[in-house]
Length: 596
Image (cartoon, rainbow, N blue to C red; front, top):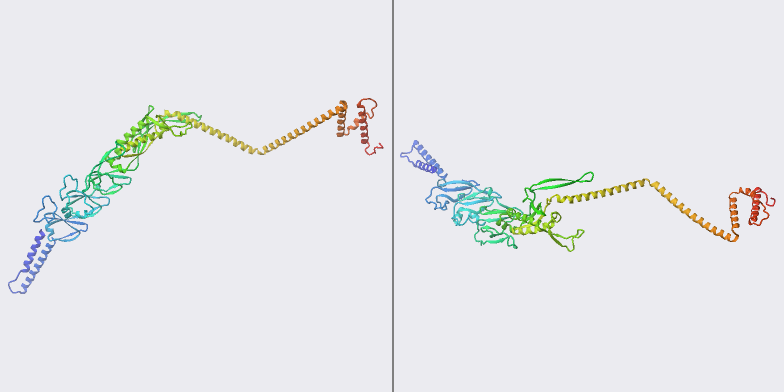
């Protein structure tokens, strides 16, 4: 305003100086004064014009937005409005973009502010609140979302105010990018709570909406977690775009949802592992074998703590009067179609685990382990019967080890029913190692250890026997030459034995034949003559072997035997004659027989 007053005064003064006249003829002195007066007037007019012009232009920065607030005007804003559309006093709907703007007396009639361009970074959204516009209808939580086609036009203040824009929080959000907005009309919130809603892989987002889109038939529908169970959880769900829990979840991706309008609950649809373990003291009896082969046993205890990631501690079951901690693992999964039911009924998978399934699992495991078990029948050799048959009998402690599969199947069947009621699919139930009292296992362990010792002894014996056989083979190889000689000697002895046996058989046959011949001679010649002939034969044989005995025999046996009727007389005479002839030939071998 001061600039305007100074400018006007300068122009008036300059004009007065320029228009001033001199009343007398111009002399040199007066001419100088005239020229000076005109020059001052021109300068003053120029100064005044510059002062006035400086109040009529605005220069807006490239990254700025010019905002005007009128100070002097004849019209006042309508009651309840804060943004002027027709030049009324107050904040103006018009904004100025980058560059030079000429508006007569703009700096006199308006206050000027420059705001930065609104920048929404990637991964965030800008939350809008309109400070002016139509009143929000009763029952409406926030202004309905503006369609993507109209949002560019509706972000202009004059369009927003003339086309039905509603005052208050807006469902519409500013997605990443830059915007030139009238900050007198729109308040922008951008902080850590306005980040995008990210649905990661393996999850779905269940949406609870606080706003409703126009033109949608919003009818609630009772949706059950299981179509086959009347006891299943049910919850009223609505179509997408209505107030309430949406029937259809959001699948993995990034969504720019106004958190004031929508609450998104993430539900993990991957297979989850719930472990029930720890929380008890485990007693153990260790068996050992000393150097003498005696079995010794020592008792110790181990404190089994509950892991941080475990769903709960181990389940205690009572079997045959024994309290036995039983660890187990459950594999569960939520189907995406059941995620809204899970969230609407109990709040989430964690609440399903803690409020519904964990108590159900504990109860079912206790009931099954402490009641009866259906076990397959087996033959005497341990093989399954053909066809397979089953027997229902009370559960025994050792069934927790020997018939674990049957217990797991029974527990799994019953748990699946409870899971379906809650909208959760029980994929698998697996029992862990039960903490069976060691007194029940010592006898079995001792038998197993004894069997192992027996097997070890048998193997050692076999090893010793093989070692002996190896040593024998090695000794045999070392003594092989002598063994060959001994074998040859044995073969020679066997051959000689066979030869002697053959000679003996031949001699026996000869003697038998000789005896038969002698008996024949006896029958013909008589016993005495046969004996004489045998004696003569032996004598002749001896003389044939030793001729030197002939002279001696010749002296003992007479050459001529006279008389006698005995058969020996003739034989003796013949023997003497023979011996004599032989003797003569022997004594005179060179003489002819006639001369001798």
